[in-house]
Image (spheres, rainbow, N blue to C red):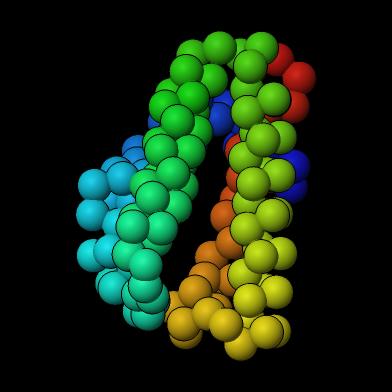
Length: 132
């Protein structure tokens, strides 16, 4: 399973970069409260803190997405970037499971656990083993 589709790892990195930017990075930077409401989050006060932290996360995701594009063109960088992606995905999975167990997440975030598991497995399938 690991590396089964490694010959398509460039395409996968570009695709995941675009998806990260469109679904999380740009919306969290530009319209964080609208994004949060769409995912059924309750918006607490003070709003400035929520907006700041959301934008911080959006910037981080956007930077990771841009580096996916860069890693796609650099065979030597791809294993590092895939390791980084797998680490982030695993951490997000743990965070979502923890939130679900504590019952602090909206249902959309709890349902996201399945997405994180599938994304982890899919990323393993595109993992670049050796040189590509």
